[in-house]
Image (cartoon, rainbow, N blue to C red; front, side, top):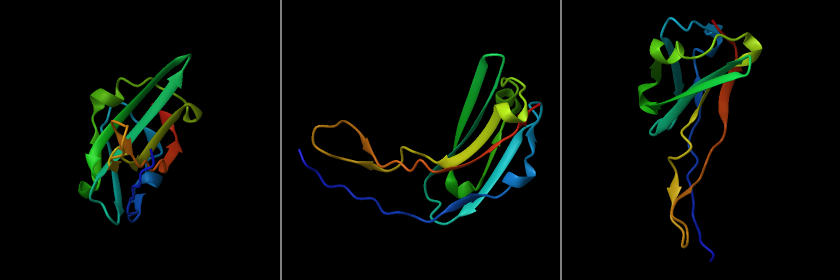
Length: 123
């Protein structure tokens, strides 16, 4: 049946060191930073690379208030090396942090699918 749910939109956030990351060195940790308003929930950072039919991806979650996240080498080292047009990174608000209840469903979430991303090589 019908239901009503609402969500308060909140602030913005920005990937602050995006421009200085020009490639991913799979043998070194990768630290990203962000800033913004209403940083009370979680962010999702991840990436992927593909080469010769082999595709791989990773996703990390961090408390948005920390404004930094470091992806360890054991994660990056498992990614295949790839040219700039075959690798990417992204930063987004966590999609499952705005739940709502409604009759007849087990779980309901408002999802913000906006993200900040870039293509780059995995070396």
